[in-house]
View (spheres, rainbow, N blue to C red):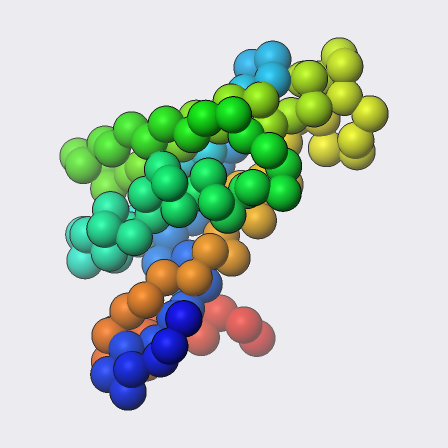
Length: 123
């Protein structure tokens, strides 16, 4: 993605936190914005299509997004992403808990001024 001098890409974790759950071969990932301004950015950029592409290496058959504006949250339901589910999968993360951490690396384009005003959480 080409950078414009007034905008910068930052990881999602600088704007939101996340929780995940599972049922069978479906993972449910909630992304909760830290504030209303962040929620607006997430709603515009963190689409079902973008999340489907982000997780393409796991081969989800479908991604559905639900918006909960009153909580500043987005909930993603990723179908067929857990290698068959807890009782069938041979991977180390059968519940898909690490998927939320992976999603938190998703790049979000923000005004440079917003990125500079965010607390530095890298240290």
